[in-house]
Image (cartoon, rainbow, N blue to C red):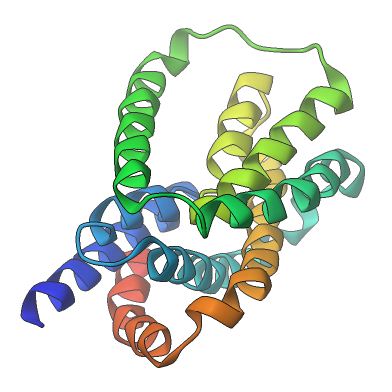
Length: 209
């Protein structure tokens, strides 16, 4: 319907714009719009497939910033959290998911305003990094929101923009690939493919802008 197309294109453009500018947040921005017209399973499939498309196009220029030693705790723990998130996705009530996402966006907005005044976190080491990776992976499985917690954590660590993107962008790619494999057998039907193809131009245009 025209209404569904409008919601699809608006979410794709807004999410692509956010991800192109910040390197993350495609999922939370796009699904905040998409969930008004799409079921959570198809919205998640759009988030992970669209997010992977954007991240795959931006990861190569910053490949030298990827430090395997720094990145490893996030990805290992994330691989444990993603299946748990997918398990929750197929069982969660759609209305509850919308409410939870709205609350999360409100909290994140407060964090974004407060972040210049927040203290830096130096402790915790790899165990803390792994904890963030686990919950980031779980959020990735639930709705494709894998990059939000790692991005926040990198900021709280005081890492530079380049170092931070060398952690959370490859983490997002990993999480999207695993999530696509796990939910693809359910959500990658004819409707899912058509929705992705229709969303792609708006998504890429937003990322380009």
